[in-house]
Length: 285
Image 1 (cartoon, rainbow, N blue to C red):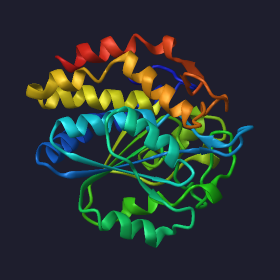
Image 2 (tube, rainbow, N blue to C red; image 1 turned 60 degrees about the vertical axis):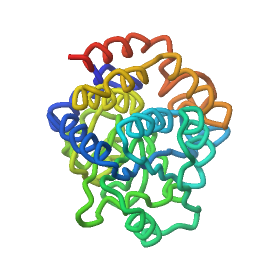
Image 3 (cartoon, one colour; image 1 turned 180 degrees about the vertical axis):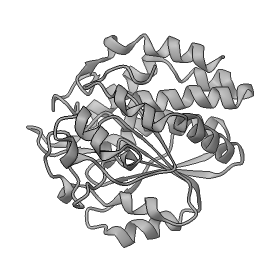
């Protein structure tokens, strides 16, 4: 269901990560129902756009996932950087969640590790957050180097003893180290150059990362059936549209077109409306 095409067809990413969505849902359900703090890292700065800004994919899904974790009794801690902070905060506010921890543009890897290590997290999950390729550079899908406008939040994913997960859709996000480089190279343009090599314990791949978060919410409903009604209520196209509107109002743009509007990765909201009832059905199974 999640591997329906978004800006590109990433179905070939599915087999290398088979079973990892269920694994991540189980980890998050256990952490949240136990009252744990769960870190969510998101935000991509689209530096090549006519008006550079954070993209809408990632912050929207992260806000819904944060709300879901709260409903389970967990405490989400959303982290981003100053380039993406306004859009991430707008989505969190529209979802009824508190503001993000925003790292400054000057943050280095040690600053990131210190911030995350001091947060007392039970798990850490990246959602549509780009990470370094094999040469240590952060690349967009167009092979534009945005290392200079991306705080090194990937550095937290090597902290010892911290369970990690990720959601991605293009090969250049944190967690795509779980997918062999030759698979990324075969599926997406510039794949061998843009592929992020940061691995995680469990990776969810979807046509867009927002959809991956919605799939996680459905999976959480299956894991915690006594909270399913509240969780599945979040799989609402009206909520998705409202969060996209909030992101856009805060300056967010479509990561494929580079323009403002109610779409994600070039896909209009109306074109993926069927995803919500189908995920709701699966979440009740």
